[in-house]
Length: 219
Image 1 (cartoon, rainbow, N blue to C red):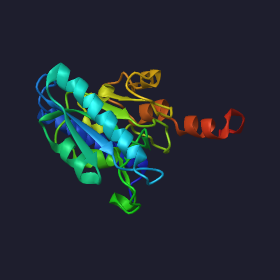
Image 2: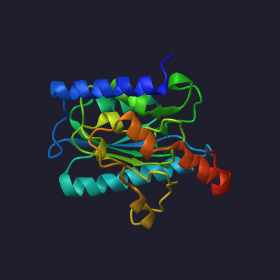
Image 3: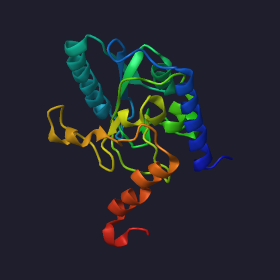
């Protein structure tokens, strides 16, 4: 079984090959925006999903007024992600829901792809057929919960600097005007992230230290 370093290198090699082949989405000026909201609800009472859906349509309204192009999709399984990532008319993606920096919870079924209900950066890399020219905005918690916490949208985008997320933070804004939205920023300034850079920028010790308390952080 491949380790994290090998998995990352394979994803990066595929990303490099797509660049070399000139495989890109429509330009941001004409490409669509796919807004994907998760149907995962911690309490399993649909209240979270209702909030995610309302936020998705609010963002859609803003984009439609500005550019006339947006599409809102409920994520009940991996197919919605797969379709948006593989569609070259989609230049930008927005994700909304519960998750962490490297993944989004997609439903309440614990037996989804790879035996869980998370769609992660590796799932995204596997279905990528081209690189997107717009932006990938992760509106979910941005904690570095894994030993290798590659941001979810990394290998979907033509530039790794085009991924934005609340890195290292929980994220639960009360609305689009909430100051908490300022946490969503570019994850890096690197157009091409190396394995070493990912380990440097998104260190799991940041998450473990915040969870245990600085005086109990694992060295």
